[in-house]
Image 1 (tube, rainbow, N blue to C red):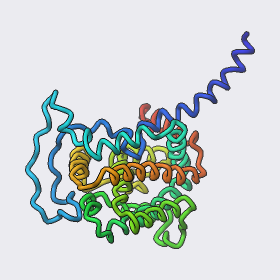
Image 2: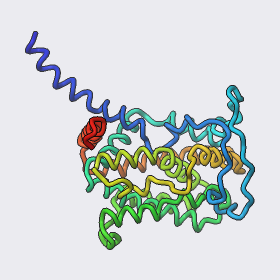
Image 3: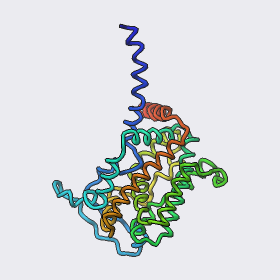
Image 4: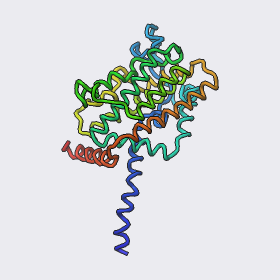
Length: 306
């Protein structure tokens, strides 16, 4: 009996490893439709710096009171309209296998600096395509949701300079996954620009929701100095993410879109999720190494050794 137990324990530990990764990463998924359900109710109107491309010179709205306990859920923009369709449509469609691929891929990016810098480089080509499309589109629906405070390209360039040096542009090339992603953005921008809303929703809101936590995880796992190489995850001009996201969802629900267009945007958001999986699967880092580094860093911090 003793020998049997001794042989079974390593198997149990190995079987538990994927669960450890998934359990930890689900707390910090960068695509916010999953974790973002905690945002509820009205919020303070955003300052002028938050305003979108079509409203930068408008007068800021009056401050709104947060809802009292028990206020109807319909006052929450996430519980109605296209916001609800996107949250429900993306959450329900993702299989456990896809979720596991996503979170394991993210932890691979935290396995070592080489993998993380590759992830940053891939995101550069994605956001270059996205923000070029947002800047040049004539679609007013997209421009309404295009807030300068959400833009990530300049922050990514800071991170690339940190990892690759001042000549970083000559050192990076798009991977197959990044190229496919960027091509998709260009295609919808040219053929169905309203689908760019799915890209704004999936990437920007996810980056904003999980950014602070994920930036901290990267710093701990990779031993980075505070703020170094993680500018992407810091939204300096958005001090209150909850208020900002509530405002963004309110504008999303006010867009004049047909039912067919809304359904196509949900479908596109699900495609974006799979495109992100492709980028993560290209990374070569070890998810187990990242989890261990995070664990050991937390232990050292709790013991005052960090």
